[in-house]
Length: 286
Image (cartoon, rainbow, N blue to C red):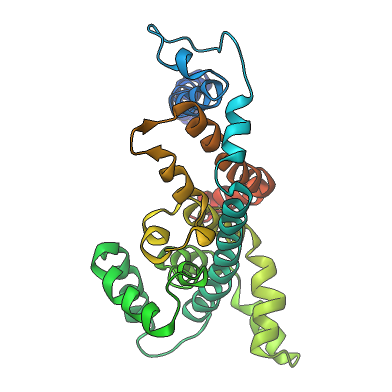
């Protein structure tokens, strides 16, 4: 009787492999669907303007040309635009990591009255659309003299509820015993934060860095509102200006778009190990 129960209760490995196979196929199909537009943009950036409008369209360029990239790099002050975007994305990411990690550390490891309420209020701000707070933030920047300044688009989005939530949830998994032992050894709160919390939170910090850099690099609406001078323009504003009054130079626009994708791809390739570790750890802890 016991033996029959054991036999009935045994998992069926073939069925598990079948489910895994279908899941892998679904993931590959979805990944392919998401990557098709990216590949199309990259391949089309090597086509001439005339070839872009040929019907039926061809996937591969018949006469590949790099003149589109030369035109994109020489349009306006491209190097200046690229530097502005890189400076904004980098500084905003560093500032976001610092401010969000401090807030997450306090919400995860300190016990005080109203902690849960404060955390819920922080999360509630996610539901507030940008259009609602855009005018008040603009007026604050105007009073501080940060209009038409790169710092005017770096500082406002530095502290994000998404970043606080991500880091706080990860820091909850760090044992409190480690912090208590450090306090008994005479470590200050800053030492605990900088020498224990931050090193142990590298996967979550890397994930937030990828998100923050991507958000700031691709941001258009806020730089469009705050920046007025040509010398302060970012790459996204420069791309919008390629859409001229009498038409769009699509070949140059596609080449410039590919160039703007490169920094994000590099950031992800550099930090993907930590990003995947964070996803794996989150799946195990959840």
